[in-house]
Amino acid sequence: MNTGLLLLLITVVTALVFDFLNGFHDAANSIATVVSTRVLSPKLAVAWAAFFNFVAAFVLGTAVAHTIGKGMIRLEDVTQYVVIAALVGAIVWDLLTWWWGLPTSSSHALIGGYAGAAMARAGLNNGWATAHTVIITQGWKSTLIFIVVAPVMGLILALIFSIAGYWLLRNKTPQGVDKWFRKLQLLSAAAYSLGHGGNDAQKTMGIVAGALYTAGFMTKAEMNTNWGHYHYWIILAANGAIAAGTYFGGWRIVHTMGSKITKLKPFGGFCAESAGALTLFGTALAGIPVSTTHTITGAIVGVGAVHRLSAVRWGVARRIVWAWILTIPASAVVAGVVFWAIRLFNHGA
Image (cartoon, rainbow, N blue to C red; front, side):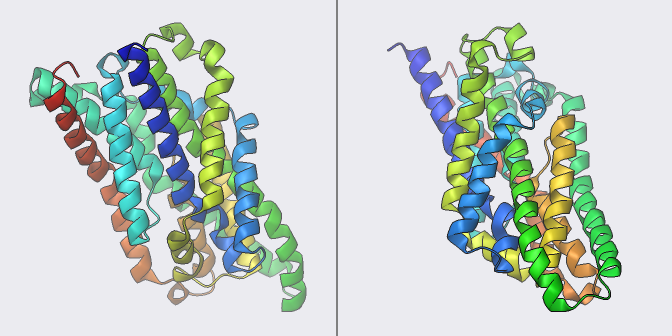
């Protein structure tokens, strides 16, 4: 086996490991509400979420994948080593925040790592003053804007759904409402898992496609259109890996998302998941790589705030927001250091 092919295999395997950890880390996004309201047991909930994470491969297209693959970092500045360093940076940050129980964004860890590794390569090759030239500004604008917009959209939609629901159901008994929404929450959880798989798996698709392009297995025309005969292999591998990660779950973060931010009932869980799903469907179809974590957190806060602001545990929410702010720069620094270490052993990197 030649060195180039071996390096490509290492890159693809690392990407799928990240995708698995993305599902593992973000399992809370899909199942925290449905578990905390006791609609499903943890085992059934992860199986339900994993199934719809995989089904997303056939529903929500690849617009986000193309944004990640060719719209954020100049392809001329990407090598296999840049991709590997980016993935390692994202994986390290994901594992640290999983250990700390913080629901940070795997998506932002990935794009932060991608930028950090590419900038490190440019800085080491051409001087640090040129490091910023690898960034495609237009591709980053929507992503950075939606760091704020996605959770706000989730919050506002959840507020609207909650207020409308309380008005429509004002004459119903609490027991009757719980009975109906325990069933409806199965649908909202499925919709959110579909949105999660459709958005997050696509980021790994973009990275894998970029690795195939830099290794010479894909032409620029294929990279810009449908990835040629690698199309379905990339989609199935990415969605399969994230579904497997979701199945094994990340219980530390489930606890934070499902009970520490606010207390949820089936009606609230339905409103949060529906608001999150609508946000993710829209952004996935528009090709905007948003954070599923930010989206569902905003929606859960919106459900809590409809009762009274004190129903939301703002101290926990503050810690989560700080983790969001630090994710891109922290993963970029880790990825930059990893690339520098690779360069020490391989001057051609």
